[in-house]
Length: 434
Image (cartoon, rainbow, N blue to C red):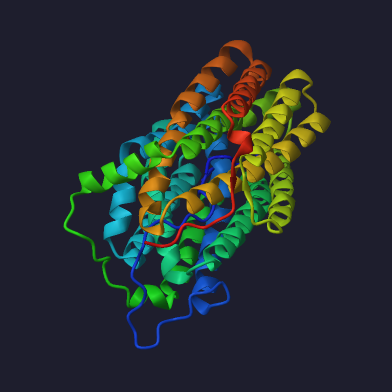
């Protein structure tokens, strides 16, 4: 479905600038606009990686379900990303403030390419591959993914500055929606041939991403960020305190967390639902993901015409998503699930885009890395609970019951957000860097 986790690889988050970072110190520093050579390569690296993410998003649950035929096992695999965020998230955010971006981005891409290459070889060479190895791979992908995402967000202000940050985020968000449309369809085609082939294709995208990052000239001459002599603990505490003190952001993150709970529960179980209720092939599953991605692309294009961040747009997006899930639970059919995916794709992009813009506008750039990860601790922290509980509910009561319950969680979050006044929130200014 439309990836709501800022997901859930689902869930890379769309373009999140994170910290004040030094620009290149050359006598003639690179241009820092969306039209620059550096942003073009950064954008290409991000886009190819997004496509790879979407391939594994489909291939991983298929690999687990093929070996176990268990909805609960699929839920456990899906919980790995949330688990890594809880374990490493705050540390990764603070670390992104302290290290040079280029080596971290390249190293995290390299490790994930090696993990996926090994997983591809195992699946092809050993038809009775151990599911535990797939769990370990999912955990490693999540652990290095959270460090990569935190660093990538911190690196964006090195490449793009000022109000062009908003334009850059819009273009990266558009790439994510295109990836949501094309990646799952490609995954469906690849997995219909071999799940190992799908994992190998994702490994290749990380290699291409490394090449793109290596071409960003601003990263080559970048020095390690110069910071006051503070401890990691104090850096983390500062980011957490900033988020806690901002009541509108806390209201918004609660709404998006409710939407994430719904999204993760149903996304993790869509493979069993599609196989047992809709009787879809692997390629057919990919087509549904593509439909949701296409709806997200069109929504992202429409959002590009507005510069206003609105709380009611977040509520509307989450509500549309939830209503689509409810339809799939009450009236399961191939036609209804088309509507579900359109609602999920459009609703999640509407809600998450306004959420990202709100965060960027409420905090100075020097805090955005830690703020981003602090909020992700909540947003990704619900993933293990939602994935495992969703798997248990689907196993005991069936996929349709899960979809209905998950939709009710999403709608309850919307009702709460409206009651506490989030709908009246309007943010039009941009916090200055500093």
